[in-house]
Amino acid sequence: MILNNLNYLLATPLNFEMHISGEALIQSYWKYFLAGFVVFLLTYLLVPVNIKLANKKGWLDYPNDRSAHKKPIPISGGLAFGLVIVLAQVAFGLFFWDTQSAIMIYGLAIINILILTVGLVDDLLKLKARDKLFLQILISSLLYVVGFRIEILTNPFGPDLYLQYLSFPFTLFWFLAISNAINLIDGLDGLAAGISLISGIVLCLVGLISGNPLVLYLSLILVAGNLAFLRYNFYPAKIFMGDAGSLFNGFNLAVLSVTGISQFKGVTAMTIALPVVVMLFPIVDTIMAMVRRIRKKQSIFVADKEHIHHRLLKIGISQKGICYIAYFLTSLFGLLAIGFYFSTKQIFLIALIILIILCFIFAWLLLQSIIKPK
Image: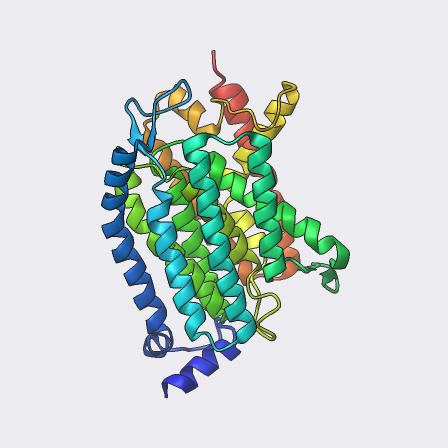
């Protein structure tokens, strides 16, 4: 009975015409939710250990002119949830029925160890921008080789577009864009963790709706890890995720958006447009930061204190208030993304373009007129 329900769910994307009972869903995916609970519990227990280790080793983030905190805070908290999630990925690979997908999972787990290592080294030694970019390109290339790649783009007005030789540069750009968007937004207590959490929930729901078990599982354990970590990272933070955590979240969210395109024939694949909608807040902030630095004839990697959250702090909004605003916007965009999922491709494209334009207009007016620094 359980196997029949599982095969039915995996073979047929969910939609509004289907009437799957809650019992059938629980019977089919209870191991996934159990894994999510274990990831949550282990992360919750490991973060205090991470805090003690960071204090003992001197892994601290000392306040500077760009900081919102006033005292040294333990850093590299991404290790706590990152390592647990990696173990959960390996466990899933052991029981996965498709060899190709299992190999991809193992590859992702190994690359995630590399991501955590690069992030930790950057947290402790402050890598040069070019060295960090090189390592991000290396990580993105390895993910492509393992099988996480963008090979097809949905064409709203005709047949899908096969990228062929453009697949690698397009995938590379996508991984770099999303990973850096999450990395750059990690400037306030709980901001990056909360946005990653909400984005993961949306992708988890879409994975469930589309009948993609790989997306469902990977997003579920990512959500569980960030939820447990947020307990210690929300204002006033007891620990920061650091680059170890923000790069881990960014790359894994980018991976989720291209997961299921090739390994699940006949199953609705995740479209990259969905995470674009969900993560509009960090994406818009990142693009505006790049434009701002180019206009000032600065390197795009030069850190500044003009991100959206910095500007909101300057006008007196609290860290909690800014996080709640970001959470609300991300949740709103997430609901829109889920709604778009059920619309036609043409409506999706038009709505996405309008939404992006409106976001840029609002952000530009907000930054240039309303809260322009004195």
